[in-house]
Image (cartoon, rainbow, N blue to C red):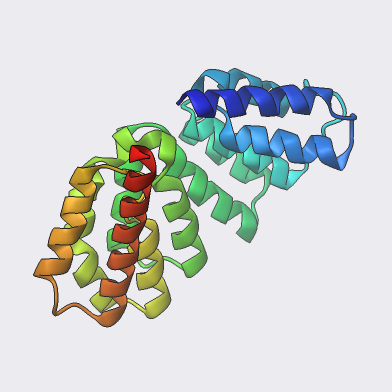
Amino acid sequence: DSLRAQRSAGLYKLALAAVAGSDEQLALARGFANGATIADASKVKEFLEGKLSGLTIDTEMRWTLVKSLAERGVFGAAEVDAELQRDNTADGARHAAEARALIANAEAKADAWKALTTSELSNHIQRHMLMGINRPIQQDLYKPYVDQYFAIVKEFCAKNSYEVSMQFAVMAFPRFATTSETLTKAEKWIADNKDASDGVIRWIKEGRDSIKRALKAQAA
């Protein structure tokens, strides 16, 4: 958390100091929005409101800022819907799907999980929703879905196409919950599901290995 706060503060300072209207300013502002702490959300909102002189806020940048604010609990469904009205395109629909999944409350996560596990979604929409539902700074909200993930991933992958299955198995894996408890759950799934397809076993093993690496790094 302290490293995230330092990074957030550093990127904000650099964005303010960058030449107005420059590519550097745009890149730094985007980096800040993507990595800002919850405490710095008000500064992200100031960027969206045009308070950083020279910052080019095109459609993509607006979505970057809107999604950042949704993830940090400032924006909800109403703001996401309003942004979609501004950008009622295929790209806008993908960004809106991600933004709704990013909304920082239990109801939004439940809606996203239900859609991901019970609805037929395009590959693009599914990917963006998965990008939104499982976030490093929202692990308290994703925690209820860790056990559900391990309970359904084999059946989900058996019923869906390779790409849809891979996206779900890899991106919904609790890779940011870097605890021994998560590792134990992954190991148990691997031991108990030897009849699963080669693909899903490989994806779960890759997720398990990422948890192992993270735990090793934490212990170093």
